[in-house]
Length: 478
Image (cartoon, rainbow, N blue to C red; front, side, top):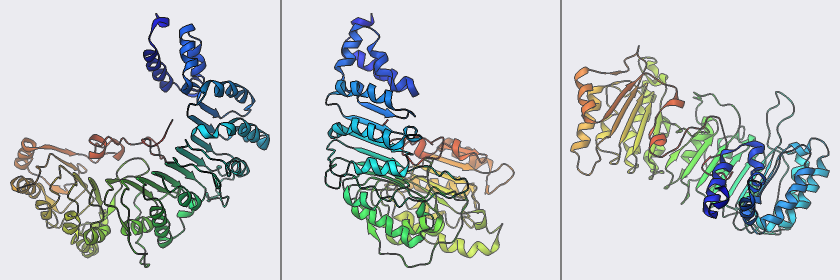
């Protein structure tokens, strides 16, 4: 029966099995498929892309090199995906590097993706020096991850080793670049067609807000087609970092026409300074390293109100802190009030906003909620997490006012999360019954954010990553 299936059905079965495998099973799948029967062998040998994935994770790459010589003949002109890991360089580093490069360099014109991860600096330099004078016209994805620190308790640093591939050649179709632990200046000025850029540079941590703003602005000014930017300092940052923003003068604001996804993992002063210096009219949401929604603190309301920099934003999470509740800290009331005076102006610049989350915000007897009656006409979701200073009746009034307002969408979902022993938002049975009849209304105990259903996870399809990662799963190639 297997020998009688059509070629297209064979491909469907093969790729489903290939993608569901892991480790050696996955890397050796083309050989396995070609040994099922005579028909499958003919199909496999006629399918160049079966043999176009070359991986070198082994400590002794000699056998892989011999195998891939045959694979490259079978791949013919198929685009090649190449991965070089750290294991071949534990012993005879230079010898193994030269052997691998002798195998793959004659086929550089067919590289589609090239990944080099955790290899020693001298090997990185050797590999990329070989690429200085060649062209890779089919290369779309380049990923370079620096060597891990060998000494415990030593903080990571960005190496001074500057990689400069394709100096005298071209990679005109390179659209996705990941750099971990290497300087980025050459890449962003050399490959101006990049669309996805993921940078993990440890020097971002101590560079200061002004220098970080200059770096990000330089990246955006150099890459007009960029739609995804990830910046990560790869240092632990407290979850509730409340350090004050830098008062230093920042460079003039710049705008970028195409960026739609931005996440920045930096200490709060640097992150706030970057957000305050950019106009991103197409950005739709801000993410954390775990693909959850990044919070913007209340001190960001002033630039949001003044410049309206994120007019296409579909989801926004505004975060105060328990210190903002006058019941906990009366001295914070003035600061809270100053920031929230800009709430209406900030929301007025978000005409496409569909989801709004308030996290630990104090509303001063509902005073700051009333602007929701006349802003954000497309708003569907409102979430309150550990908020206070308002009642459920005041929230109901907003729901009713928005329904009556011409040109406004009705609210679809209202979520309140607070501890059972607290009554931050005062509720009453009659109002709760009305809300349950009128929309999707939930009152929850405060939950682990990793298990929280949000607009981004349920509507936009952004699933929370199980681990901290510098890689956007939707942007990477297997």
